[in-house]
Image (cartoon, rainbow, N blue to C red; front, side):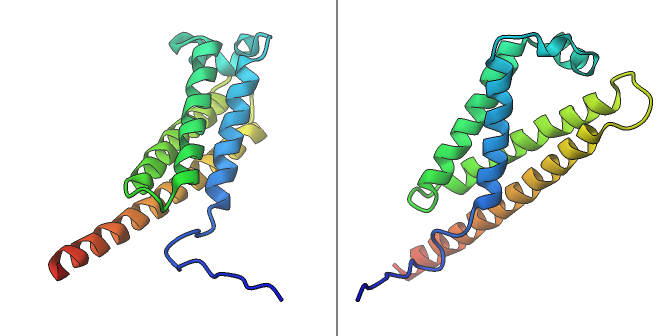
Length: 149
């Protein structure tokens, strides 16, 4: 017979959505770092005017890595919800810009990517708001603990 230890309710909450968004962001950044000229496509004209493919790739890989690190240490380090929230909103800004770029690519009609990136933006916003709620809960607990001490 094996005994399973049940984690406390405030830890190890399911973060699959946050992991999925971080992995997609990591994959996107890795794709930009691969050899090729992704930004030569008209869809990415706005991106290439701001920075190179390598800069965008390194930035998205960095944000995704930071987000994954925050998810790994989640619950074991007090500021981790703030880090999760910040990286989720960075991801949301990136996906919003991607959606905008796809909607203004000069081609008639809508692109499926426009809506896909908008959905990823919405999911990252949701994740950021959930992280903010986690931080508020941590702050309330810390306040109660200080009053009780």
